Length: 182
Image (cartoon, rainbow, N blue to C red):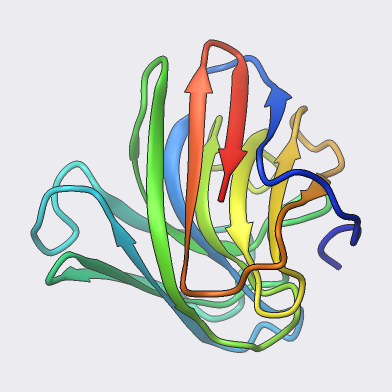
């Protein structure tokens, strides 16, 4: 699972409507083994500083965790994927009302599967089948702008450049338009 492998520009967009949350995600391998991704995010310091929260989404099998130290978020997670009609992953997030953006430098990602993912996401709810938009880096399929436009709907993917970690990812919301870039 994961997404199609096509070549497109590094910046793509999707049109969604709703109030989203800012997410730093780590969707991992279909075998639900544990993996870690380290993301350096431009946010205030602390140990999951308020208003950041860590939580599993979906039936991950093995509980994940999130920590923050020295300007780096470290997530350990399990789950089938961030894909299809329902997601299984661990993330660190904070509320976002209206327009906004998040950037992260993905410095490492375990190669548990070519479609293991780390990056940034804006999500309507914390439900497994929630609409969302995400800009992700994978160990075997480059970067990908992925989204689900309706609750319980099917995910879609647009390939970005063939970059791997370390690399910067960015997601911007302006009204109902979500733009991902690398």
